[in-house]
Length: 256
Image 1 (cartoon, helix red, strand yellow):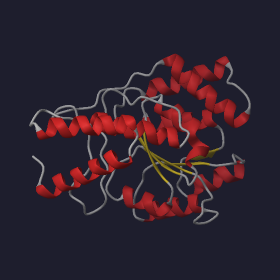
Image 2: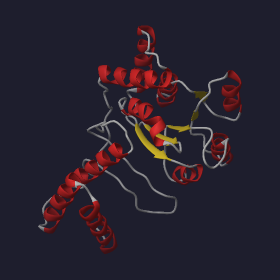
Image 3: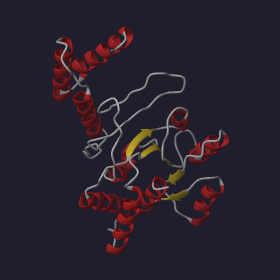
């Protein structure tokens, strides 16, 4: 049962969708409102999915369906309420099984977009092996910190095809806020952002200082050995500019 405050917030949000949304969002919001008003069983899932589809299109991200079972929770420190989508009150997410052909297609697309080269058959096998080791873990969530969402669109699609839920934020400050109240398997960060040229290190230092041992991988324009060593020496788990290596590093951490 929604509190009066939550119901007011929901009605305001749906009103915004009806006023500002596209055809699909308006149709989904209208359907929910009618069912809710009639006391029928109603779900916000179609509204959320239509908004997600429009947002991904606006950002130039490919359409990727979420796993049929997932549990997504985010909360800001000191807030008691959080957004969630669950199938039943006792829902436990099941292991996501990737479509192998689609997964390889996404990895190859990311690799070609970034390096101009496709993966060898041997490398593809190594990556599928890395995925298989991580596949049994039903909780796969990544916090991705990068101030250019379009720059990582192929890599994001690659990881989502492996069943990874990705939460993207553009800044160190927002990342630290989310990390205060949420669990992630891995953090991916670029190095330079509007905040500064070494924000990847700033984020890494900040989370380690407060005792957060979440694995952090730097994904930026360099994989020079001295740059990789600098990340490792500060408590990170790796650094790369190669999509296939990023995939491998993330799967390795998820499988632990």
